[in-house]
Length: 227
Image 1 (spheres, rainbow, N blue to C red):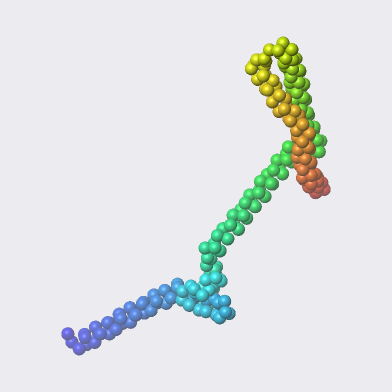
Image 2 (cartoon, rainbow, N blue to C red; image 1 turned 135 degrees about the vertical axis):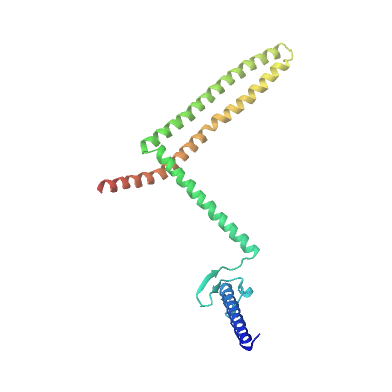
């Protein structure tokens, strides 16, 4: 190879090497840029900087910066197991509260559809109380019937006493069953007053909510008519 050819080859090699080095440098810069810089202020007020997330700031927010100094992202604190559990519990409670609010709104809309005005609600209350009264009357009739049966059984028992004959086991069983049925029915009759109170309480609570909704609805209609 001539000296001129050798020099040319060396020059080409130098150029090639320079190109490779430039490419490697570019890739390194891109990798460095992709990695970013992490910065934060620790619990002692000291500002820290690193090429990776900073352990001393795990309990506080960190910022990842580009090489140009612009903010790439804000990193939230790393939570402990206890903190995660607390966060999950708080999130669950918030979700449950949202669901309760949704159900409450659904119930309010349902009430408004069912009772568009005071008259419809009053009528429903009256029908509910009438139903309670009917059930109570039936129970009272049943009590009266059981008392008549008890009187007849008592007379039959007296017959055995006067004849000095032992009452049959069937009669004894009838008396016991009558007394048990009578006790149940009397307790049911006595509970009808409480049932009426429960019905009125439910309708009073509904009415309290409905009055506000009726007022808002009427105000909305009035505003729409003015337009």
